[in-house]
Length: 477
Ligand code: SF4
Ligand code: SF4
Image 1 (cartoon, rainbow, N blue to C red):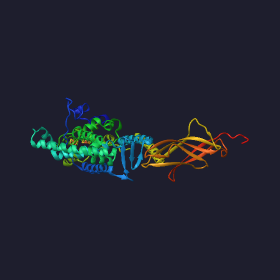
Image 2: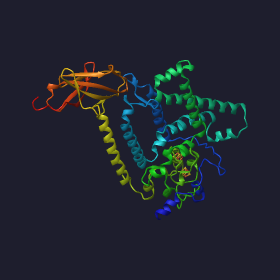
Image 3: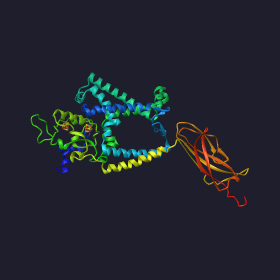
């Protein structure tokens, strides 16, 4: 059997329409509501545990502090970011750019190797949808069959009560998520202030919470899988990120075809292991049939693996008709290998991460540059002194205010600041000017190297070297 024939077997020819229309849209273009059957099985149990841990991390992280400051903060409004207690600001833009490029390359590499494993196990959309909102729906309205029945039933007190209580709980959770989301942007202290102060003092904050709550409520109560299939750019990029060696959730068509209904007394000769029970389709939260091959809609939730394993147990066939596998491992029995494409991505990622680490290790909390003011050489001053004017630029990357004093380090002379004493605000950036005055007869050369010490109190926080210009000495001087 050649490869083309094998690949063609992946697709149910009669149902080839899946290529032309979304599983969640009817032929008339209307939304087809998905009622996935309650998932169960070993992968689902493992996902419940992983989801619970990730939800805990997500909820508790905003409360974590280091030296009184948030552990993590993404304050886009003030361009202030705190990662693992370290403050990053606009002056760290180059680090942000390299970090973002590294992240993109990492995502490409990770997806090329492991497919959409992130979507199923760690994506907040999938976790909230499948592990929080969907579970509440099962609890209130029952399994898929009951939900369909309830939808078709006339409005009674019981139906009204169930639908209302579900929506109230959904909105409450959406409100809670929006608070958590906001705490990552403005910090938990600011959020607590919004909650505890009179509403009139935080109209902007309350507006933001209301808008976020509305968006989350809409996404989880109505939009659901459409967020993954229509909006998510990561999902839509799968076509270029995956290849035949990527590990995806795949149906083993070699083993499963030709599919046929199962009859206990017929045996397993001249047929595949798929018994056409449709359990893999019934549990799918995006409404697809994984037997049609890899599809953009598949969020790797593992529900079809569990459903099919359960069926295989019942008909006494080996598990894994649907499993984590690459197309090449199914069709060519190829062992997993690190492909040249993945080696290339890894090399690029190694370079990027190395550069990032070097830059991070050399990053200082305080930076300063001193340049002689452009266009000026030197000035003759009374008492046989020569002066040079300098431009000073300083960046304070810390959480603290720093009062600054400047001193000449390696030569006797005077240093005069133009203006008041400098006090650097946290995350502040300051430009200042100062004069250095040196006695003319001490200056043997036209250019003399000088060191300027930048002090906070008695602590030398930085020493900057520059040069001092003086007139050329005449031969008889
Ligand atoms: S659950 Fe397994 S046996 Fe049943 S239809 Fe799906 S692939 Fe075939
Ligand atoms: S095809 Fe399987 S893994 Fe993919 S979304 Fe549907 S149930 Fe989940």
